[in-house]
Image 1 (cartoon, helix red, strand yellow):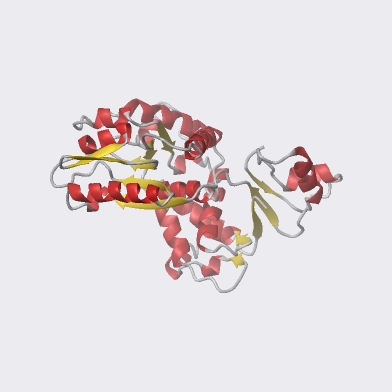
Image 2 (image 1 turned 90 degrees about the horizontal axis):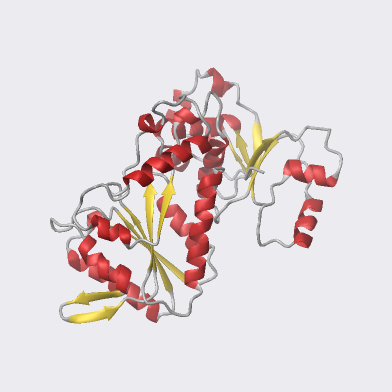
Amino acid sequence: MWPLDIISSTDEATKTILEMARKYIALRDAKMSEKERQSALARAKPVKGDEVLQFDPILGNFVSCNNGFIQQINWVKQTVDRYVIRESSKRPLNVLLAAAPGSGKSFFVKELARVSDADIKFLEYHVASFRDINDLFSVLQRIQSLNLQKKIPFILFDEVDAKVGGRFLFSNLLAPLWDGQFHIGQETHALGKAVIFFAASSLLPSPSVNNVLKGKHQSMTYQEYYELWLKLVQSKIGGSGIEKARDFIDRMDYVLCIPPTDAHLTDGSPEKEYWLLSCLLIKKHFEHVKRVEKSAAWALIRALAATGSRRKAESIVFRSFLPNDISFQFSYLPEDVQKAFETDQEIIGLHNTFFEIHFGE
């Protein structure tokens, strides 16, 4: 079953409780016992009027319909969970994020930290803003301090391939990442337990859509696109030629590839992933929303498909005015966005039709 189902709630053919459950609820929680699963199925009821958009988050509120990507997420989560429950560890767990700008790197790490049962402290650093090497040492000392407080640091180093004081930091990261130690002057310090995530566009250049689709039909499913994209990304890992970059990547315990979205995937109709992402962005900023006007979601889908990034679509949601209403309507979008679609017949045709969104409920 897809984690996301867009379904009609007016189908009268649904007769039994189990049939209603299959049609109106998606249950994929691996931790759920069979008794709990059957109880949840028995409570499933069709909703009349609106269509129902039901999906199960795969990691907190981080969601996807892509089976290959979901598998990677699960592998990372299992690795992190096992590391976190260890009583002690001589070095950090290191994860490299192969992700296009605006693909949700920070949100992924935050959700991974949020769903953990451990006492996690999330910190994000942009290496491009470091003034000198001392800023890196300050972060390492912060990790050491959090360990003394019995907290487990989840650290995201964004733009780790940026130069600091005219040089790259890779050589300074090798010992902390693999030996769990760092040196200040003549003194050696133990780093302690930490899960450290890195993002670096030059180390993992995301292939262009044209390269992914080269020799292929220009319309394909998101799953097909992901598989092609993943192969190209993996073939480029460490190919930047930057000094010590190869040694740095060798110290990664896992490389997680977070794929972009693209207009070529829709084939004239929205892929499930697009509906999913549009609702994710709405729920991220307006948690109380239960219903979404289709035209509003479609406007966000257009932004997602046009850029391959979540940022433009998220900016639209962020700038939206939403009164105390459980419905997210097209009229709540920023005026410039409404103006851009005022003569768009596809958008106009979706006005006044809604779907309910259920986040694993």
